[in-house]
Length: 425
Image (cartoon, rainbow, N blue to C red; front, side, top):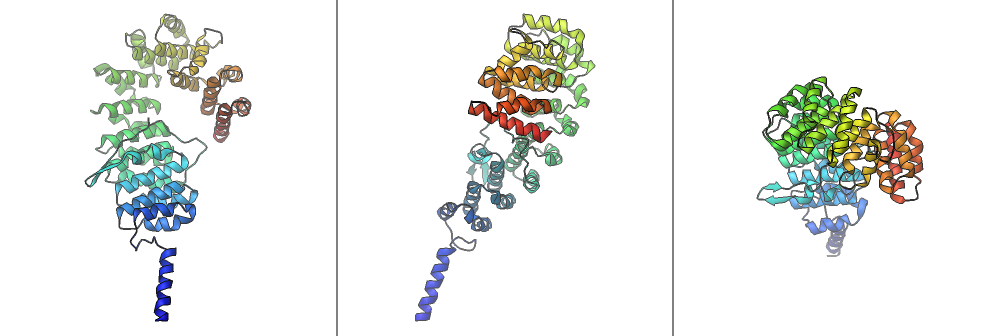
């Protein structure tokens, strides 16, 4: 009797120490409590990823994501191969969250609902998130997420595609191009946006077949993608789309893509739309003249700039004037207008994109350094971002000064930009 009682007590103690193995009855509440132990609980949480109960595996993935340390990556990679799509999606969100903290509040997993055996959800952010260039994800993380692009769940495919874009996963470009051949518009769209973020120009020709897609959202994304990836072979198709589409959004984007692909064949088209009644078409035409960089176009562009009353095309014309040689800084000059506009919440994104392109020319950067030295808080922040994207070694002194600015937000942005430029150099 004494031996039996001792055996019983020993067994009970073992259960108290190790209550959450994959072979024992476990409740979701037990898993949540285990997560409170932090990283020390990761081995037991990883074992629970093999539990036959889906609810337990889901709680385990959430708990591992919550721990959020480097040691969390391996079990999350394991979870991406789960047979359930929701587990896969939550694991993908967890991997992205490690490199981009806060992503789990905006990824697909944040909105997932089960309808019978299916899962449904929608993304809640604006699809513009990317990690900083100096952040380098582990190769096995990229491989695990890429593998989901060939899975059967369209939701998991879309989630994986978005994740790969956020992680700037150049190694995943072949997988993303293959995903464009799927029958699911959501996965196709997310793959296109991912290719835009990765910016591997060799992928451009693999996108062109979607320029006439019947899904408007896919078609618009494809048009934008070939422009961003500088696929010059797409020019004839874009001209055809522009000439024959009755959809104003498609025509705007087609002309915008042509504007990103400077080709003499498009010059007449830009002239045709420079005075169009549609603001978006006028702006795209102005961008086209900017990138053709033909000095003889400057008088025409300058006259249009002086007559333009709408902000979007006026900024595009200012951009064109600067690239065509009107680079002086004065109160009402085109270059100064672009710098001033980063103070405008409604148009700062437009001005920022133009300044990033202008700053690729080292000869045009000095006015940005001066503006960053004497500018407003918003000017300092956005010019730091401009220089992070396009600055060279000559930008380092300016960014070092911003990194010690008296405003904490400016200093943080300056330091981030400095790290980005140094990593790129």
